[in-house]
Length: 164
Ligand code: ADP
Image (cartoon, rainbow, N blue to C red; front, side, top):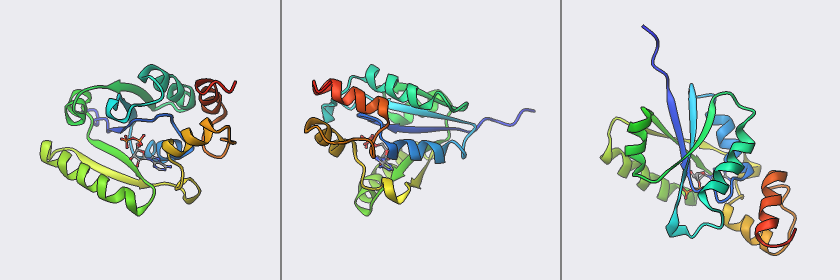
């Protein structure tokens, strides 16, 4: 009998995808047969980019990997996991302050579905200070984005803020 495929899901807002997110994807893809980057609409966060724009930016970055794909989802994460037959949620940790929120979310998800595990990966320390929120502020003020995002994402940010 064929060995079951181990599917991981890396959910987030990715508004926009940063070098920190990409670091977690690169680390995570070694753990799973397939890694799905799952883009949440996150309307409560009033995202700068539409879901389709975020999907396109992520798609551009991950096309070099054979076992990573990107999708959007608008249901409860645990329902989406079951639909995808995914076993594990992947999340990234930057700093201690991430921990409390992530811990709460992982425990809540475990209550919703005890069969699904959450794993955390730590980013490379040079990516730890990167957050989509600060990147948008730097972009808005015309700062250099190359340490934080890829050239394609930097271009999209500049276009959004009418700087290109
Ligand atoms: P969410 O709205 O779900 O928090 P984000 O796009 O902000 O979505 O983050 C998605 C995941 O990526 C979270 O687990 C977050 O901790 C992680 N993450 C964000 N930035 C970084 C980074 N610089 N390095 C490592 N992980 C990160």
